Length: 248
Image (cartoon, rainbow, N blue to C red; front, side, top):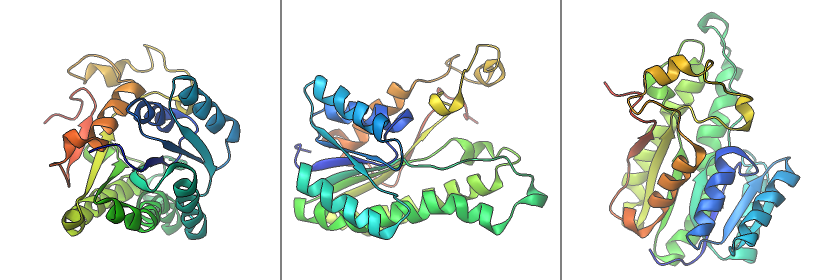
């Protein structure tokens, strides 16, 4: 895919989103760095990209709000060009709740990030992708779909819905040359995890064939591949990036 148009990354002021923005910019994409409240973090990501010779701009928007998403995509087009790549990375709190205590609101709190937000982003960006002759929609998933850890039924159910959403869109949008895939990280320590020590990660790492935790850069590298022309014949896939942690 020739670099034409721009890439939009939601929830990008820190963590995986920030790394993904920097990596896409290194490939030549003008990057729309979305944030909801961390303006300083988003501006730092933009500054990092510009210092490295790339192009980026920060855009405040709540990507679970239809009006905000419509405005976000329009502003990104105005500043950076029509949106050709969307990385749906934004997420909210992920509390552990016992099955007997899970409420419908707990489910809605997860679905709003992993079903509603991607739907709004796709609907706003799809006309741009069609005008450009194709595009990439990349969901950031999770290995939790396979692990099915107790206490995370609402989160896991929403991530499962996200996967089926992606596969359905892949079938529906293939004729438009729009690919839809899921990049599913394992446990990748970022700011929200606090301090991760060798001791606190020992049990997890013991089940990873490659014998270590992954890094945000390794997730960003895979996202960059899926966004590139090299992935042009890949759609409807879930690419798990976890060092083999969930191998059967």
